[in-house]
Length: 231
Image 1 (tube, one colour):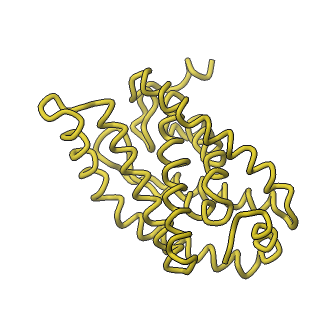
Image 2: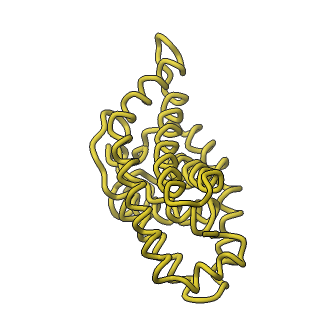
């Protein structure tokens, strides 16, 4: 019933409902499943750590939901917005954010008509898997400093949109230049609006990390022992 009632095209945020061909919807759904399964196991383990860890995880989910709901119009099939996944990736690791992103994207598809149910796998892969993996990798490489947090969040954001552009290019290659020409077109569209948003998200994430380092000391200490956040 939900699938029947869902709009075919929303032209809202993420890749819109019904925009991708079914074969690509199934491909990205299957591709995302292993990451989400790993994330579920890690989320279960981290929720058992000390302090108000479940509340702490909920804060990361709320941050992701709020930022990724702030949309700006783009040209075709998607739109631009912060992702909010870098913050959670730095604290909990990238795989936990895949689970949180599924929940966020599902709620946005059902109640805000942002993204869609058929494109849930594709949007999860770009925003909930690749973005957090890039953010976490940069955070580890950059020395876990404020600059590292800024770069992790900003470049994780940009990575999400680069993947979205490639997803659209693979699904809709240019009749003249094929996938490469389509990728150039989609990347040029997204880059114009996404770069300033990525910078803003990086600054917001640094501010958020300053707040949690001040008021959530016990949770961060617990995560250090749980193979996650390290200051």
